[in-house]
Length: 331
Image (cartoon, rainbow, N blue to C red; front, side):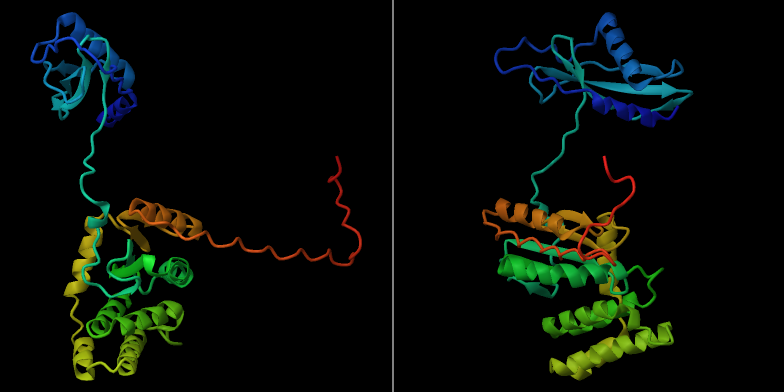
């Protein structure tokens, strides 16, 4: 039997005794054989534990939960021992419970920061920051980019600030790293140039490889696009060209590592004030997350956008005056 079956113990409800006076906790005492047996029978029943497993129950220790002590339980079978599992045992010996405690003391916004990346939308003081992990060759990223961000900027104005971090999936997108490097070369001198470049590449992702659809042509086109954008933004062309020529990927690797440390495996992924949204979802879900983030910051979300007007249905072909008669549609 797989010890993972023990996860069923999370189904045990935490039954807190009401506030008021409580009996003196017998903390530190060894369970009586009768009480130890009752605990063991419960755990075996809740986990369908076979008789080949031995259950070792430790003494009561202090618990932060009023009316409960902690007990440590170890399961062994055929010489293999699980890690100790902690349960709660009520001071009256009538209830066993298990629950998980999580630290929420840290601000979720600190989970993913902008790290000095070029931004669009609101200022650094905007109440909501959206950090997106992006792959310039990813068609799903391109779809999200073109549909989502213009709508967000139109609705939220300066309330939302948008930042991209690089997460190129090099194994399936061979020119994504070069695109990210060239974009960052522009970002070093012009945030506007960076976003213009990102907008164009995402909007023409299927054309970057040219008619040849080769990596060499894609790289050539990416470099040309970056240099042309640099000229439009009047950046230092010598510095920009040197950066493009060098193709230094240290920053890209650091960004990818950050994403992997967060458990990312695919793109696109958004963090809205630290709350993760992975994959493509209808924009209504994104609005909902942003609105909740604004409320948490003490801000009032803007009114929801008007619902799209449905186009009128066209009359049935060949019969403009009467509805079609479908067999079986009558009751």
